[in-house]
Length: 461
Image (cartoon, rainbow, N blue to C red):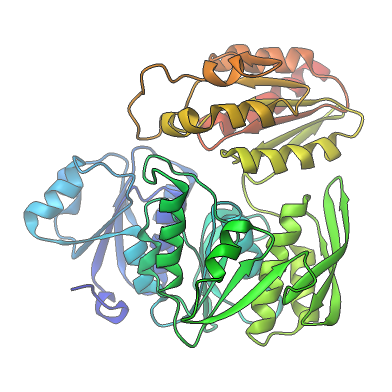
């Protein structure tokens, strides 16, 4: 039987992989509830140090005895069943919960908003938290990325609302049972878990069915996947957003700029103001529209919501500017699906202006590379120069014949360079003023951005 939030106060909860983006947020909120937190991670990090400063006991290695004395063990689905701590927990008969199940407990006493979708979850949930803060609502939130303004990915607020990023990658988001949900889009991804687009669509059908009957679903009517899903929903109210005049929240007068975007917002036939963002791209205007529509349907004021959206400065690894040296701009981005890369590079092209767009891309997972290598090749050719690193395996075993060369062989001008040092040296030596260099992917490619900034600083003095 799943514990309640109140039953966990003063009990010890152990988090396997506590340094991860999602797990660290749960640990932070658990500490605020006076739950005793312990955990383990494969390496030390600033996230681990921050949790230790808040009172968590953390080991930087996975050892079976780390779980001894724990009352509950939480693990992410990325953790192997052979993990010694997870095996030990089972031997001791401890209650073990997935990250999603643990988050559902932390959300259980709040009015929850779960933000789901193949793309845009982190940005949209971050925008939602910032917009509600602007309304004075002080929401709790647990997000898979760091909100730039606050420097945090999780917070226990004093208000009744809890905003949670709902990850569909393993189907576990059916645990949340939210009052309201946002679905930004539905595409085929996580091919290691979902064999077909129909499997992905069914997962979102199952998720939508968990929304409380007196709650509502906010969906993007510009996306065929979410539009088809909405047509099947009868268990809760529906709120639509998009560029079509039939939407509850309709955007028009759209303006896309190098590092921002703007659109007029019309709520059920009435102009309520302009969305003005400090982050680029049409996709981010749609993310903001999801937030505005949800907030208005909850009864918050348009002016306050729009003010909050105008202050939003992004999240970590989402078109994050890491530095500018001698006119060369270095950006890091998490994009790892062809659709995400497409919109990111379109925004980067506007940002580059007359400069060149140089991309360093690291494919994430062999299964995704195998499924989408042609699509990756097409969108990466949008850049003036694209260097492709070797596949970042994550938890997968190699698939025979699947390497990054599948992508570069299908490109017009792709370069396959697996050596990190060779890549950074080449980019630093050849950079010109006004160039935009973007490190792209969900693996450790992000580690190259600060190296490039440092190298450019040395080169240009």
